[in-house]
Amino acid sequence: MNQNGLTHPIFQLVSEASKSLGFKTYIVGGYVRDLHLNRKSKDVDFVTVGSGIELAQAVQKRLKNSSLSIFKNFGTAQIKTADWEFEFVGARKESYDRKSRKPKVEDGTFEDDIHRRDFTINTLAISIQKDDFGSLIDTFNGLSDLKNKIIRTPLDPVVTFKDDPLRMMRAIRFASQLDFKIESSTKEALKSEAKSLSIISQERITDELNKIILSPKPSIGFKHLFDAKLLHEFFPEMVKLQGVEIREGKGHKDNFYHTLQVLDQICERTEDLWVRWAAILHDIAKPPTKRFVKGEGWTFHGHEDKGSRMVKPIFARLKLPLGAPMAKVRKLVQLHLRPIALTKENITDSAIRRLIFDAGEHLDDLLILCKSDITTKNKLKEQRFQKNLRNVEHNIALVEERDRIRNWQPPIKGDEIMNLFDIKPGREIGIVKTALKDAILDGIIPNNYNDALKFVIEQGKKLGLQIHE
Ligand code: CTP
Image (tube, rainbow, N blue to C red; front, side):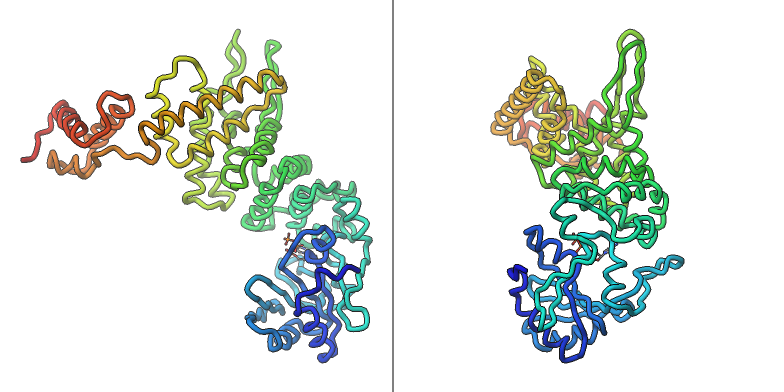
């Protein structure tokens, strides 16, 4: 076979160390798969018929500038160099004790080890014994599945998924990342075993979900998740987006498929996971805000506000980070209709300044979301909408250049207002601060300290506050 992927000195070192210990060792899993897909990987898994820890210890002694970590409980060891990671493990019989869910370390043959793996494309192994160094071992026709772009389990899929239900997420993740089809009996087992996902921790599920979202066309993954009812297990709000209701002959779009189209479109414009999450959540409150107005049709009034309030609980439940990423997604959901509102005629500079202020550092991502939110099938309409948004972008740039409002803060802050009137924190400060911000954004007073101070004093007087001399 092509030995381009085996040029790192470690492969020869492992071969020699393994021979001197009397073990047989193989490269397995993702590295072999990715080698055949021409994907560069620096993560290598070795399986040895013997002790993975002893082998790693022997190899590390011979490899300069490397570090060794031993995980005694798991019977595994890891060697790290500046940019490579090598895992060593002894061949095992079964990956998990089904009752306790704890990894079970039971020695097995190389064949046992290959049989317990998740997909045929991950069962490919390369022997590194001296006499057949580099030869491919393809027990389950993994190579042909790689060529034909098929995800299939090596054993009965029900058994493979019962062994570790996270593999259902992995099947879909590989299908989405690699644009592979899922073989039909494997797909059936996704449906029949979907409920068993409940024994997997949310962190591990979300890890796979994020890999789906970061794939080039995540709709592939989400459609599988929906069809197998796996999505129903951990993301019911998204499931509720699906479906069309018709009343008085009037329907609305299917918001699930609309959302997936927005997500695919945003992936052509950004690699940012959180902006992609904003696409997933932008219409999440359409089902709970849906109303039918007689004679008019369907409305989703306030879905951007309600949607933005749904972001935090969804992030918390899915164990996504609640700091800056959550705040960013919440803001993008909240503001996702605003740039479109600015495509109307006679828009004032003040409305544009307000959007720049409200979006702050997320303005560019907001425009990316809005451009991706156009899913009309009518080409002429699409061109018109995109052109309108480009105009908004142009007008924003003009106002920005003049006023430099992005990341702007009013020239007088809350503590200065407190000192000025000698008052404690309270509602008056909020009232004065908001009035000052609005006055500057609306162009009523210029954006400088002296005019701001005059304005604040006037506002304070209106509230019955005295200046502290
Ligand atoms: N594996 C498995 N079942 C799992 C996880 C992993 O059978 N739930 C096996 C597969 O053979 C896999 C190997 O362990 O190829 C290594 O797993 P991992 O490093 O998680 O995945 P990779 O296949 O290397 O893919 P990626 O790096 O894209 O996650």
